[in-house]
Length: 341
Ligand code: DAH
Image 1 (cartoon, rainbow, N blue to C red):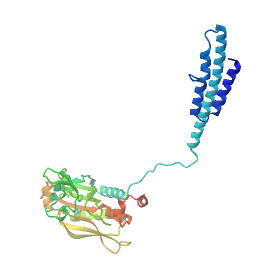
Image 2 (image 1 turned 120 degrees about the horizontal axis):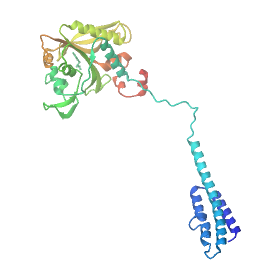
Image 3 (image 1 turned 135 degrees about the vertical axis):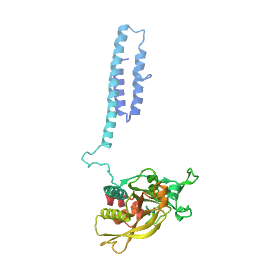
Image 4 (image 1 turned 90 degrees about the vertical axis):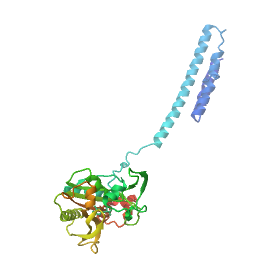
């Protein structure tokens, strides 16, 4: 073996590495020179034990020096591949820091929730507290306790969503059809005076431009010793003036019927001016709490008198924002909802 052979091996390796188009080829080429059966390894192994130790030593040193050169060429090429990969990545994943930032959307309250909060604030300012209640109700609280007879149409399976779960009386639980059950629930928990509102969701098998299977109501209950229908009328009229932010609202209490109030009224409103000027709009039911309901509340009829109202919260939102199809509130279409930010 001469130093010429070694030189050739080194230049062969350098050329092979330089020509390797990818890392796999490069590693294969490496095996050809430095692997177990590689040219240089073979040379090292072939150093005969019979050689003079001095010569063996110097030959070995030469081969190792050549091996070192090959390794340097290999590593240089490896580094070149790594650099190329890194540059490619940097190019692909480049961030243009001059582009405007992508902000995370803050979002805003749904118009119905804005209405809900507005109602809470106004009643709060008039001394009413706000109480939350269950949407899954028993037959007793939803109907019986509210003096609704067994054959009341609202009890029919078509009007209400029933659950497969039964209560202690063996009656199916249901999604409350109104927020009125909260009157009895709350009055059984808290001693009078009671001055509360109960906003919340209610459900009915109903769908049209003014009815949705899920809708929101706000119930009001006022129980004390010396109050009258005039108090209810004053409070509710004040609420409406605050809610719509105008004093020229006409409010009418029209005689009506509800099983849980006697006497009962329907509350209608009319604006002096504007698009709703022509007709009265029904906005709420109301009345003096029926003696049977007061009894179910566990109250002494001789000491206490109660007034209640139940208003369509979505209906109030429709009027406040001039929306004429209730369902648009619940479609979740951002183009519609963004108008109320
Ligand atoms: N719960 C009735 C409904 O959903 C509304 C109502 C009427 C509530 C009169 C009341 C009331 O508290 O006094 O149609």
